[in-house]
Image (cartoon, rainbow, N blue to C red; front, side, top):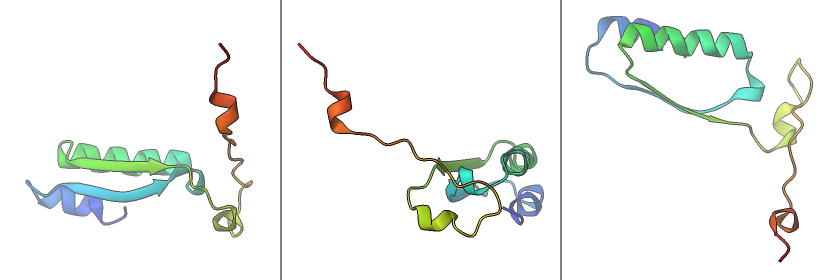
Length: 81
């Protein structure tokens, strides 16, 4: 995301698309500021995809607490008649 603001400032038709941003692996305020900067400089030509991740091994090297995934059980979604 570091090159996007510079490109947004000097282009008029280029759209900016991210791969999936795993938000729990990023500092929320910094990610929001980067996305907002590209949005403003590009006139809204940014598309982002976000996710929460799924593999706990991906979180081992991070300096903040490990993401706690919500567990979904198909039985929990069944309704009783």
